[in-house]
Image (cartoon, rainbow, N blue to C red; front, top):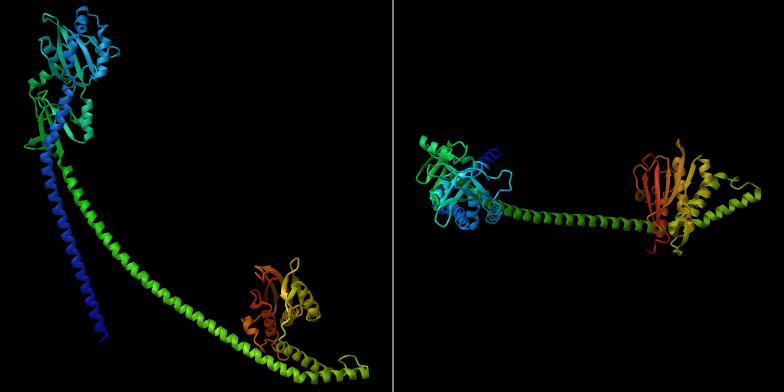
Length: 584
């Protein structure tokens, strides 16, 4: 039955997964189809807009060319009216007119202004100071000079045979009062700056003459290209006039129909307009691929916006989920803290209960010890006095008359002394105690026991007094107890070494007693301080020494720590607040 339920659950989950995947595919398909439809719709719209706007832009570029051609159209007519022009031709002396032509060219921005005599020779020019000056050149073959000789105004585009740079030439005849022609004034205008401006605009613009020869435009690679083949007669005419110098004319891969044109296999929107000042045609091509790319960019931008919105929505939903998860984690952490606080409270309660029970036991032991010492103190004292009296009467040495009995009396007296320590509750005022002096006094008391057991005691004490507040005798009792325990621990060991170290650490006097005995077996100071607990053999102690030690240290504000040494043996550590730190 369980296997059937598991199979049903797995099939249901798989069906849900397939349904979710199918929905995702449908949404993705709709999204792709919408994007493709948007692309084609935008492409068609942008093509319509470009088709309607291209003629206006072509008119704009045509006006810029017309302005460039007519800007200095008045200059030749003004110059031929100046008397210096006729005087220079009559006297054949250009000394006065050369500087004037140079200044006028600089002020107007004309590339060249020059004076031609009746034979077509350049008599004066604005570049007369240049090493490559056109002064002395003959331009009889130029149509603009030929038209000026007939008394008309000359206009012509050609490549200068001196500078090899293209330009637009304008000329007017120089005549006297009777109308006799003595020569001509010509002005050359450079179209290179205008072509560069067109190139900087990013548009593909070019200008053709009546023969379909491209002589100006934004793309220098198209210059002197032919939109259509020309006849041999037209080629000979161009060569005779030297209009394009030694430039080779070449046919372009060009087809055009209606408002569409193809150049080198690339389709364009095509618009033309006539130049008012000349019989020229300006062509403007708008790249259809660029228009389609713009439509694609619009679609991609829309897709990016939609994706950004989807990502934002997903991020918002994720943030809400993270917020909910954070709240859940906070509740879980709060619950864990409450559980931990309760556990710690229960542990502290158990600790307090154990301490209370221990104090109750110690209190009961104190009462019992007081009763025992009261009941047994006098009989034992009487027995000791009787033995001492017999030893005096018989002249025997102390403890030699009845050694066994004397030993039993001493042992019973030692037990009563320890019990009396529990029974006493005197609260004497604390006095400054030098721990170093207490260590020296304790050492003197246990030295003979250490020598008997062949145990070496090493003391490592700091310079100066180490002062605590307490009772000198009780502190000595504590140190003696720890040293005697250490001596008993090393008895029978191969290495019998005891180290007593005293140091000041963080406002505490730290006294350490270490030995090379068998160790504590993992027991701590709390277990060792239980009354009547001992690790010694039977008859070697009652197990009250450490209990009394802990009681004395507690009354002085100190503590006892015990642990096994890493290299073997036991380490007992006493911490007591220094006298200057207790009030702080």
